Image (cartoon, rainbow over all chains, first blue to last red; front, side):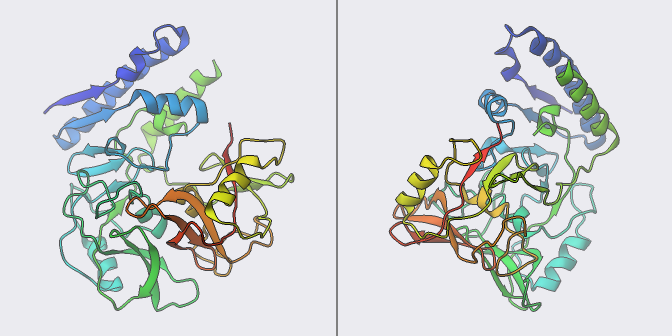
Length: 204
Length: 147
C-alpha cells in the first residue's frame, strides 16, 4: 500500500493566512480520505492538485473543462477518475465491437475494479473525454486511456427522432453523430463514483 | 468565514454520499438577454442574432459584444457549446430557455488540431458535432464566465 498526495499548490499561498489555515485542514482531510481509499482498495492513490488549476479556479470559479490534459485524470485503483466531471472510466476497452443493445448489456454486466455499477455513458459524458487539442489520432488522452481505437464508441443516448438510431463519439476526429443501433462499435463503460478528491473539486 | 462553512458543508456531503450526480440542465433566464447555467458556471447569450458569419467574424462579434452589462463575451469552446445541447429534443436540440433558437450550425473556437483551416461546429438541429472551414458561414452564440 502506498499513499501519495501532491498538494504543492497550497504551499504557494503561505501569505494568505485564512487559506493557509484551511489548506492545512484540507491536507489532513485529504490524507484521511486517501488512507480510507487505500485501505478499501489496496492500491496506489494519487491526488494531484496543480497550482495553475487552483489559480484558474479562483479567477473563474470553476475548473476549466474545455481542454483535457493528462493531469485531468487521477488513476484510482484500476479506474481513471476525471477530476472535472467526477466520472470513473474503464481505462481499456475490451477490443470488441458490439451492437448498441449488446453494448448496454456489456456495461451492465461488467465487473471491474471491484465495482458492478458500470453503465454505458451518455453522449455528453463520452464527449467529455475527447481531447480536441490533439493532432494525432485517437483524439483522447492515450496515457489514461491506452488501447483506444481511432473509431466509433457507443453512447447510451437515443436519437431524438429515430428510435432505431443512437449517438456515438468518434475518437478518430471527435465528431459526434447518430448511427443505426445494429451497427457494431466499440464500448467504454463509466460509473458515477467520485473516488476520493479534495473538496476543491466540489466547489465548482 | 463563509468559505470555511462552505467547505465544512461540502466535506459532510462528501462523507455521506459517494455518488454526486452531475445536476441536470439548470438554466436560469436572467431576463436581460442572458442565460446562466449554474452547473457549468457559464453565462450564455440568450438569443443569437441569426446572422451567419465566418469564423473570424464570429470571434470578433463576441469579443465586441456588450450584453447584460458585460463586455467579456467570447466564442465558446466545443465542449462548452455542447453542454447546452439537449439531446432529448430535435430541431432545435436546445432548451426552451434559449428563445427561438435557430436549428442551424453554430461556431465554437476549438480549431481542428490536424486541420488549422477548420474549426468545430455544433448543428443545433440534432446536436451533431463536426468541423467546418473557417471561411464558411455559421451562426454565433457567445458565452462568458459568471465571474
